[in-house]
Image 1 (tube, rainbow, N blue to C red):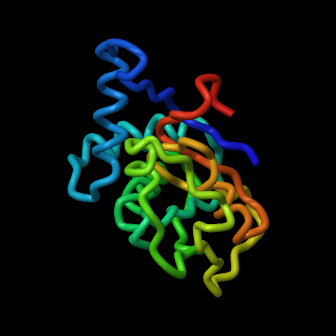
Image 2 (image 1 turned 180 degrees about the horizontal axis):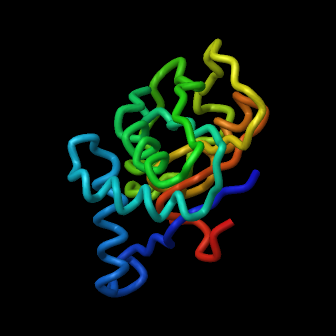
Length: 167
């Protein structure tokens, strides 16, 4: 499964962060909160939109609790900068899962894709490029779970904390 990311995510565990790296980290965390500054969503949306072309579907990834508010706001910011992009809630979580971010901070491994409890909604989509939208990708398992639920689609993240070369 392909995953596109606008920026590389660096951790301070590997040494001091540059100003740009610290700003990427700040933005990545801010995008988890739908109350974050509109400018933060616009910045990320513009950079992520530069990676894709419309017409396309933007599907917000549900948080570990099943809420899509923050990623829907991010998807709408992307759509503002990508003509023909449309946001659609086409996947949902059937039950909460542990936070990938919290697991990563605790030094635990990622949740396997088959344990994300993502399923397709009854919403039918017309044939066009489809992107799953999330703030950060670490292992790629969340995107893979979304892909498995829909049987198609590409990951689109603001920051890639897993693969410094972006997939």
